[in-house]
Length: 344
Image 1: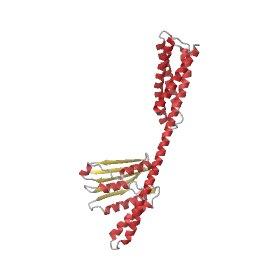
Image 2 (image 1 turned 60 degrees about the vertical axis):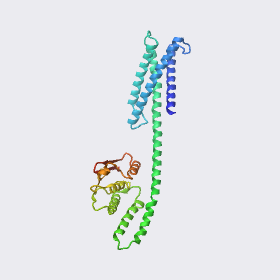
Image 3 (image 1 turned 180 degrees about the vertical axis):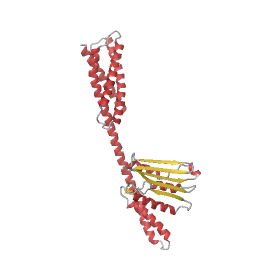
Image 4 (image 1 turned 135 degrees about the horizontal axis):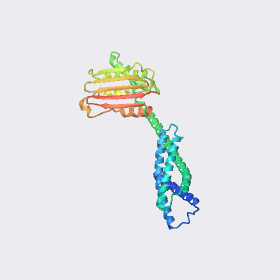
């Protein structure tokens, strides 16, 4: 419906411009447009068809110019002088080509009417400038509406994410309290079991109580180390871990629990040589994280990315729009995940 309405509006504007051209010509030559013979009627219909066709061509060009200028301009609300000069040149070219073509088609023996051309250039050019302004403002208005709709969508997505997070807190909160109960039921002689319960409790405590909107990298790395240590408890002794955490990563602020899904994925699918390599370093205002785990040849055809990867991408889109890069690669023997986040 919107496209249909736009087409009808453009046609009405084209007819209005054609009528204005007829009025200008009639005033210039002391004629009355409602007093003409069959030849004049056919001539005006021909002129109207040529004018409307040229107008739609010009309207298409105006749309392109306006969109290009708006996208390139820092202050999108104001048109530059270069933009106005370009519109003037296009108006001048289209008007004179159209006028000359009409003169040639309507009356082959008639000479070019310079006075008529000057009047048309002055009057119609002003109207076309006004039309271009309307086109430009229409694009800006649509862009403003789309941005507002996108902003509202982001807000709704964030609220839904927060709601899901609050719902997901019930299970770890219950488990945290249950672990405290089990801890005191385990005999003191079973030190390994108590240590495992303590490690798991610390992980849950970080997720439930120790995190705010953002945390220091030092806190996040401490949590990741505890998480890795806990994962090691259930792994075979064949597992080879190669870990590196940049000492420069201390006071940088980061949203929590963004790297943990990638580590969980590595421990979940490690096979083959049973090797995991993790590197986290600082590069200016970027935090660069890379984790590689070996896989078996049978896994290489499945191309698994882990259950938490898609949720991680969604969180990154909400928390760091246009400020992160996540790469997932898989070869015959390796699965590699790289995450770079700009913290500025």
